[in-house]
Length: 474
Image (cartoon, rainbow, N blue to C red; front, side):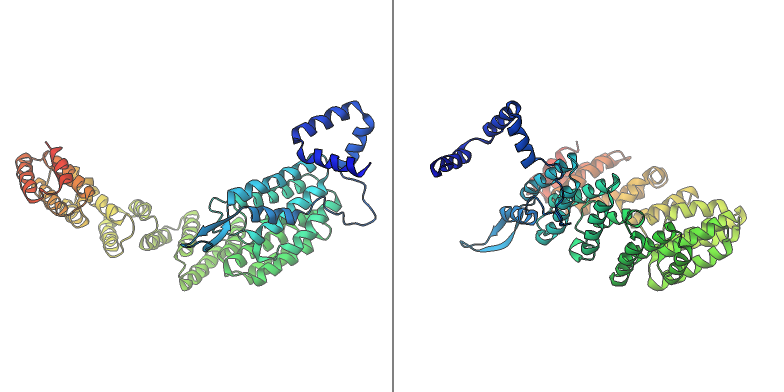
C-alpha cells in the first residue's frame, strides 16, 4: 500500500459515519468468508488461547478509561471573579453515563464466555472508582450504583460455577483490596464483603484464608465493625464445623450484644432457662453501665419471654413494670399490667402507674394518661391534664369534656383564640378563624364570636389576611 493510499484510508475512516462502516463490514463479511474469519479472529470477544504467561493482558487500559470519565465529568463552582473556583468536583450523572459502557462491555464478554476479561473490568471499576469518588458530589448515588453493579457482576460469576482459575483470580484480588479503607461505605446497596461468602467453601485453602481476613478485620476495626466481624467469624467457624473455636470466640467477645444473642439462642434451644436468665441479667448490667438503654430493653423483653414460658407471674409483672418505667411501649405494658393485676390490687397499681407517667414524660405519655382517666371516668383529672397540655388535647378529648364542663372548655378556646390573634402570622390567622367557627357550636357561642370579631376588626384592622379569615366565620 502506497503512502498516498494509506493516507486516503485514514482520511476515509476518520470521516465516514460509524453506521456506514458497520453496514459495510456486515455486508462484506456475509459475502466473503475469508474476510469474515479474519475479522472474527481479530475482534471476537471469545477468550483467546493463553500464551505461556499466566497473566493475560487486559484488552484495554481500564483504569485510564475510568479516570478519564471523572476528568471529563468534572464540574466547577465559580466564585466572584474569573478563574476563581471554590469547589471542584464531578457531575455524578455524567460520570455514571461514561462508566456504564464499561459494565455493558463486561456483560458482552460474559455472553461470549470471556469471563477473565469481564472479571478484569469489574475489578478495575471496583478498585479505581473510590480513588476519584467524593460523596459530596454524588448526591443521588449515581456513581455508587456503578460500583455496586460491578460487585454484582463478580457475584454472578461466583454463582455460576467458576473454574478454579477464575475463583482464584477473584479471591486473590479480593485478598489484596479488602483491607483498603477506600472501600468503606463506598457501596450504595451492597458492599465488597458480600463476595467473601463464596470463598470459604469453594476456593483453595478458602476457610483459612477467609479466617485470616476476618481476624484482621476484628483487630483493626472500631467497636461496631468489630462486633459485626466477630459475629461473621462465629458463623464462619460454625459453618465449617469448628464448634470448639466458635465457643471460644463467643466466650471471648460475650460483652458484644450480638454475640450474647448467639449464646442466648443456643441456651434457649437447649431449654437451659436458668443459664439463659443469668446470661440476660449479666447483659442488662453491662448495658446499664454503658448506658445503652435500647439494649437493656431488648434483654428485658427476652427475660419477659422466658418468664412467660415458665409461667412465673411475679417475674412477668416485675419485668413489665421495669419496661414501663423505661418508657418503651408504655401503652402495651399498661395493658399487660391491667390483665396481670387482680382487681383488689388494681387501685394501688393504678396509683403507681399514674405516678410514673407524671414523673417520666415520654412520647405518648400525655395521651396514655388521658385514656386512663377516660377508662376510669376521672373527668376532673382529664380536664386538668388537657388544660395543661394545650388546646390540641382539649379538642381530642372534647367529646368527654364538653358534656361535663362546657363553660370551662369554651373558656379555654376563648383564651386560645385571643392569644393566637396577637400573633402576626398567616397560619395563626387560620387558627383564629377555625377556632371561632368551632366556638359557634357552643351554647351562646355565636354572640361571643360576633363580639370577638368586632373587636379583632378594630384592633387588627391593618392585617388584611386576618380580615379574610374573619370573613369566613359567618
